[in-house]
Image 1 (cartoon, rainbow, N blue to C red):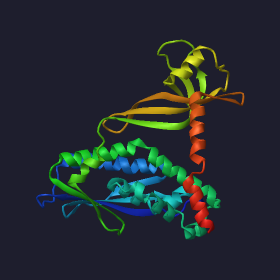
Image 2 (image 1 turned 45 degrees about the vertical axis):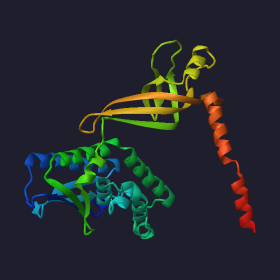
Image 3 (image 1 turned 60 degrees about the vertical axis):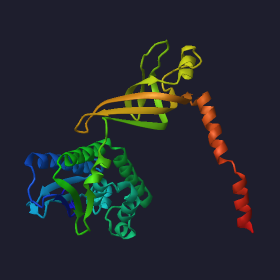
Length: 319
């Protein structure tokens, strides 16, 4: 509905190629290939943050070579989270391209949650709930491996095109941030595989493996069906020895290794799951802790116990 539309937000993002020969021209195939990676990055940030965004390019400028883009954030009354990202979307993109996103994440978040913005918002949402949703979107950014692949492909092409001596980025009227040629390699990912270890993963078991052999288990993790290998030999032998019973809804708490393989374009082509350690098994609300689980719980308890340094600190504070 027309009354549900809010005013669209327009932002400017500029990329500046500096050349070692003071020219203003660039190989068209290289430039188009790099621009494709850049547009993929911008689109992926918008998609991950659930922001409807339009991208338009301006006329190419000289000065080395300058590409300017107009980013339009399309807002509606229902896009509460997008409203708080609207002033920082190009800032997020720039921080990604200059390696400063994680360092400046808290600053961007605080800007997005300014009290004045909350007062002016037409969205009747509790502040705590909104903060939670915004943090969730940022966590989605951190977990998105495509972004790092897009950046890697972009800088890999820049590194192979020897004419580029540095690349500058500027959003709205900010100061230009430059990445020198000798820094390009720090953005490039070697190999095509990423490994993530989830320390507290809960997997609902669909079908366990009850016999010897390299058979895959099947379960539900984060709402999706997965096949996984069981790397905890002690738990595996206990299952084969019928020490545990599996019924509908049985869940294991474990350390899960997720191995993702990507193609040259950052698209995920294969994902493998492997349970490294099982901490506990839950059946009918009854939780049985494994040896790994007992050891882990003991380590946690010991880490919480006060030390002589803690006692000394408390004593000093009381004086």
